[in-house]
Image 1: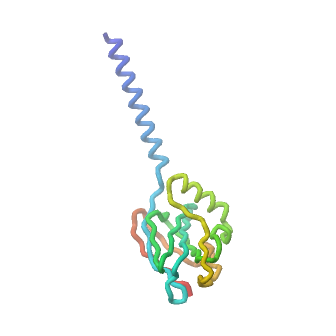
Image 2 (image 1 turned 180 degrees about the vertical axis):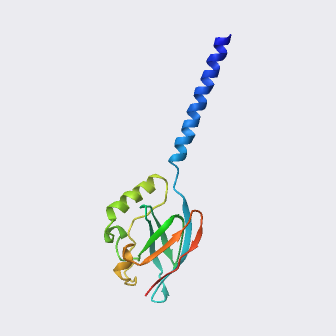
Image 3 (image 1 turned 30 degrees about the horizontal axis):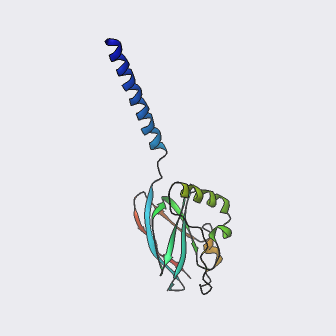
Length: 160
């Protein structure tokens, strides 16, 4: 009888250790912390009617927010020191204009695999304003901010 109890206890311990291991490993591969960022985008004092805002963290995480009628919002912005770029409609893909395109493309593919809704299709609008090209590159745009995990941040963008 004691052999049966010992076997049951050993089986329960093995199950417990296995479950604990899965919980620990699962916690290590969880999604990164994010923040909510929203704001207005103006070009020469007028709302930018369409396009995208890209957010790039120092550790390489990226997120995009669609601009509609001069406003944007995302609840998946990376945290920390964030560099920002703008992709107005009609300017082609942010991926083509950015010198870090291959790195960004890899990160965006990883984001898609993790379930984030990331659209990299260029938006076309022949009537779109001609925003200076420096705003396509987060390293040259001069746009940046700091954001903490779970913070709700307003970041308005004014392009002269």
